[in-house]
Image (cartoon, rainbow, N blue to C red; front, side, top):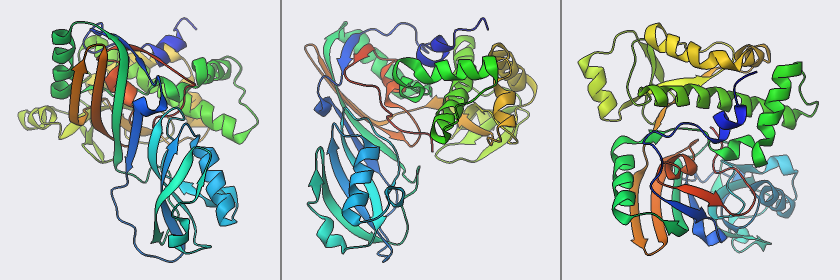
Length: 356
């Protein structure tokens, strides 16, 4: 295969050219603070307890197992909405069966975590059951001219950024990309179910990033093409638009709708016309990847090509940039940051937020 899968995963095309700055992320966990926003209130039910947990430099799965142990239940009985960076400070929601009153959970703590609030709730918390995440990020050892950095941030706010899957999706040093390449070459998958899941996830993310990178290069990542499968902002709803009229173009400019790219698999809506041709040309270098995913029984989905951070605030002080913003679920803070600066990240790679 002639295509460089690592480049597709880790070095997709920039929307606005070379970033005007460099810097270091996550020098300490406190430099990367994530706050989950559930988008719903605890319902007072009696079957489960929702736990609001502060964790620092702690793995989400490990904390979930610890909470299950405190509850006296199986690890799989603990729920959480999304995986978060280990090297970070995160305010995150978990659920456990109600084996003890909610009030008794407040203050329960272990290495790197503490339960700050607990609420009765009727259901287990499922993956993706959140509205989004708030980020408060500190970039250190910043280089670059302040006017150029400020202009780039303004451009990101006005235009949005390509909604790439971040490097976190592809494993440490792209290990999951290597597994996808082996699958393409041999047709063989890992025997372990979880490991197969990582391969499927990385393969779909590679396909999406490849299509999005091609549309960034063509200048069409933030505009609608004839035949586009269009996403309604803030939802998973999509529809096909054979023709792009003035009304639809205006809705796109207002970020009410977005163009989409593929998460390949079986079924699902497919683009037509010019959008289909662009997508097929981009996917062609990936060979049989889409067919392998379809044959594996993975359901196809669509994902918005464009992402716009909201409530963005920043402060430049010498060689330090402090930047805060909100993102919807299933998106990556690194997709925003990479358009502003080229960065190195301290500590092991981990998920910022899984696809819902």
